[in-house]
Length: 268
Image (spheres, rainbow, N blue to C red):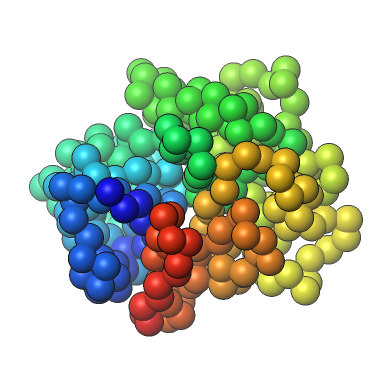
């Protein structure tokens, strides 16, 4: 078995197919890890989910902020105008089945072997891996409960911007979700700045990229994330792998081989 991880798809199906063909991906034997944002701005959100759904037993998925927003639209939890490609998904006859499947996914995936852990935006340095898995489980449990729509309608917003163990209710769930699906920079205490979306050079003090606060070797797993296209996958770290290389913006899509640590790219 070979495990592969791929960066944000954002509804860009053609480069994904190209990469899987180039590595002769075998869904009967291999695994594909999807770092989140399967849908959104790209041209083929509906067809992307239709392509992935039959492969679901070979997939390991962490939800991204765009996936959660799409779920919110599908469940009528918010009244926003969807992106045109997402609108086609929401009107599809199989939308319900696809959304039910998406809603079952987690925000953190840790491999049973303990060598890799994945989340869409990363894992804040103030959390252990075990804590991140547990907190992801809290959100996943709510998504699969009768309270799912209440969560989906109230997950929007930048507060609380600092984790506290005594947070509870919807504020707690929103804070967990923001760390795991929207985080880019934070301060030394882990306080988020969710407004900044740019490159490393322009980060306002005292904030840094979340991964710069994590000391090498502090986490036993190699951490895989996406979300921050402006990084172009560059973290300067071998133990923290960025895979969002801006496919939806015309750059490229990146496939990472977890066994050989090699990266394969396809122009978008």
